[in-house]
Image (cartoon, rainbow, N blue to C red; front, top):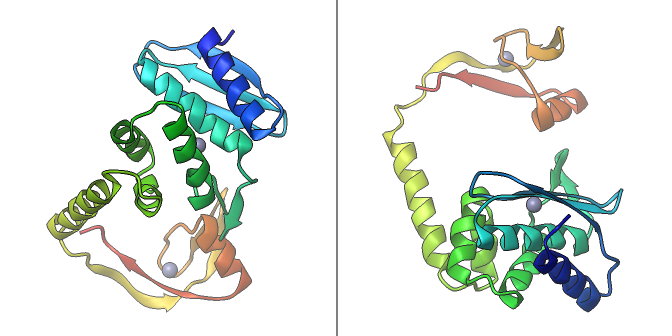
Length: 196
Ligand SMILES: [Zn+2]
Ligand SMILES: [Zn+2]
């Protein structure tokens, strides 16, 4: 059973939004960080609560943002669970329910780096600095990587089945996900590079 503060938080947030309350499932874990899953189809929020109280609270609010938000959209075959619409709700909940902006940036940004972009757009204090320093770190990492070598020159992809996978028969590369979906619709070219 969820602790009383969590049940009160869920009740208050849902009442303010005029939304029904989800069924709460609560499990305790030994690690510090919490995690959660919202299943709107069955009307439940499941939280695996870590030992850090602030992280528990942030996780409940994160899942409530999924609960209250619009159904996630898809783009190129991927479900966008954490898009701008989601973060407009989530950051508002964090702010109204006592998660300091600096904590939001560290925790949400640590789990979902793309949240920093949304935090910045929503004017969360410190988000611009966090976003810039992450971009610099990524640029630094890219500069330190040795340049990629061309292993197989650019060619038209020929999809072939290989057990449960699909590969390009020209270069042997495995083709998955949105790229596979796109190549099934129309032919395309690619190039096989080494990681360096
Ligand atoms: Zn989420
Ligand atoms: Zn190929």
